[in-house]
Length: 593
Image 1 (tube, one colour):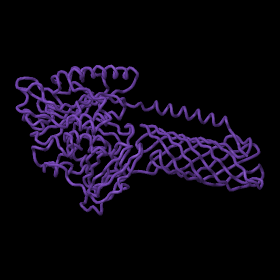
Image 2 (cartoon, rainbow, N blue to C red; image 1 turned 45 degrees about the vertical axis):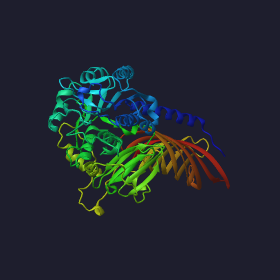
Image 3 (tube, rainbow, N blue to C red; image 1 turned 180 degrees about the vertical axis):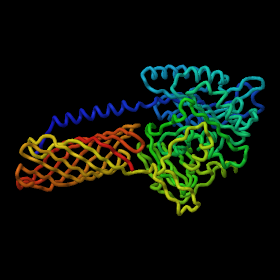
């Protein structure tokens, strides 16, 4: 017998539509814009330089930053002239590049201003990430500027036309160049260097430059000289590579997939701490927006077409990833008993190098892969090109994790620290790697699901039955699931009970705070029925359960789920096999311990 309940299914679908609409409305995503500029060319004002000092990788810096940040919402502008090698390395952004001139910059700023104002009128939250890589100059007797093809991006243009002119909710500045009063580190070898202490630089950046813009944050670097600021091994400016390493998750010390200023600042300082040659070591200056010190620079959960490498341990030593075009994506060294995670491009082959060996992997979108599941073999990698010994030995030599973060940020009272749950904090490093204990961390894979709902009974005219479901399942929408459920219902003359245990698999898609999945489960159980005044009659049953579900994340470790399924129940009745289709709907919570 096949039992149908069209009214129940219609109600369940209506409930599902309402739930999804409420979930999406409850968590509006910020609209991310990126404006990335890279200029290799010499300044047109030759008073600013004493010799021919053309850069090699400013175009690569801008292309890499644009390609990464553009993946958050697909909005922004790229101003750079990409040489042949850069076009081969970043083919997906070639068509979007425009010349890095002042006239093009003003044109793109006007477009961004209009789009951002339109977003604000519609209640969205626009955010701008501004990046510059190239020559920064301070001609004798004149105001400093960032070099463009047809002139300079002066402080007046930056402040009056960009920071004041663009009404974004937040603006994040990242500048890889020499600039006025050493706010930005010297990158080109012959530019004039202003001799200020690191404390002077930080004080000036915080009090004298951006104080009139409480919605603007900045991350900048300075150094004593500029002899090693572009590195052939990275094919990037050193600061730009470190910045991207932190934003891809290397700085996410509490594993909440939100990279905040305090995390990024601590990560960058750790990356440069052990560079012993002062001429090569970068000093990092950072300032979070005054009106919200906890605003994230990026929220990695909102990155489209990405995957995650989780549970990266300290035993891996220095870890770095390259894509199939040879672009070095991330460098990372994890401290002590901590473990960190990275968000990397999905759908293309990646290569990993570590102390444990080297290997390759193909990451699927919206999937999390533990580092320990990667197949690594003994490293045969040889160093390429001439590498400055101070950088080779010092960069990323300091391990990064919760202990380093706490110690560093505790000495920076102007930064608001992130919250690191105590059960995720590593124990002090005893120096014995064999005794190190891994904390509970982002590598969580199994959670508990508890829900209540309604279904229908096997018996005719019984009406809706109450139901409960208790299960265990993976933390991401794709993965294994095990359920134990019970249902009961009664009429004036008849009672029915049902219990089932099932196991199966779900396939899902994950978008920001909401997700959806479909799956199927197999199992069995028993059905009991009793007329009033008579004993209960039980029969064994087999079940096939296709399921559709959607969810809304309430926090880092919990979610609200709605599941709809139709149980195909096979059982014996009156000496014959019978089949009933029993629709059900469950609303419940998924909690990761």
